[in-house]
Image 1 (cartoon, rainbow, N blue to C red):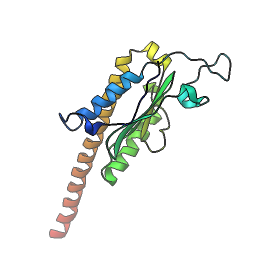
Image 2: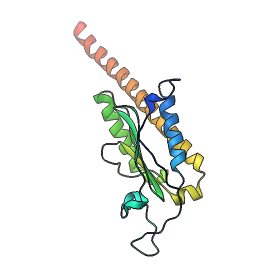
Image 3: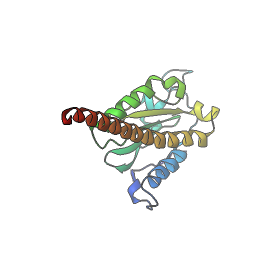
Length: 184
């Protein structure tokens, strides 16, 4: 079953809270796109490679989809007949968040084998990428894979915000202790 996926802007959804429509759009789109099936390579006999990565034949690649919350936060879903590549651009409002995001995603990608669906290298223009193949959907429950991705997106935002608050508090304490030396 081939899906016709078009660009969707999460800002056009009902506005219950700031993040919920964005994550709901990602959840429903990812659930719809996870209709993967076993598809042998058309080039090499007895091989089964993720077509979204191999890119050998255009007829098995579906239309990519971008879901954006704003210009700095978006998700790219690239479906094919036997795999999906999901790339996430994490919110980075300032230089501190940019540095924290880079360090955090680098830390996660170094441990990609523990996450099974996490790619070691993100797609250009995105911070982190996942590759879900038909074997993943056969061995794991589809809704659990979707739940993992959504929870990952929520937790990454939360972690980066907490790290930024901690860093700002520490910087404030250091600045105060430095300035008290001049007041004495």
